[in-house]
Image (cartoon, rainbow, N blue to C red; front, side, top):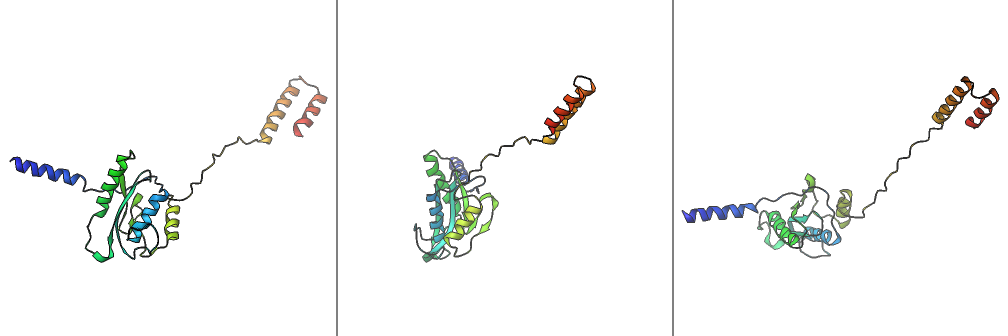
Length: 195
């Protein structure tokens, strides 16, 4: 009975990490994590050079919400299709461990294979994309590139010269009608208001 409970407990613990969570929300890659994503697409683990997805197949890429920690798995070409299924789950777990160790929080799945799943984008990357195509895609989605600061727009109360003139004329007319100003004062003040 104790062995059965022990096995059930171990199964429960091992199933906790099985579910990967696709990421969502604001995300901004830094230069290092963006280069990691390019390495992931190259399928060779190299930081530079090579043609995307010519040396291996991407399996899973995870990144934390701050965009400063990432981890990925790819399948080298020599293994063909015999690589670990669910690499995105392992990538998320390894990334989370490293990120949390540095006080940065949990990681989430950004891509499964060639498909970006962040915010349910479900964008499938073509087999041999260029770096500029990836930069353009990331820039379009706000994941990488210069942040354009939006200057706050101050709403000025429009000066409606007509209504203020109208208000002044109504006040002037009331003063004249009540006999508080003479016809000459009325005409001179009217000229001032209209100019």
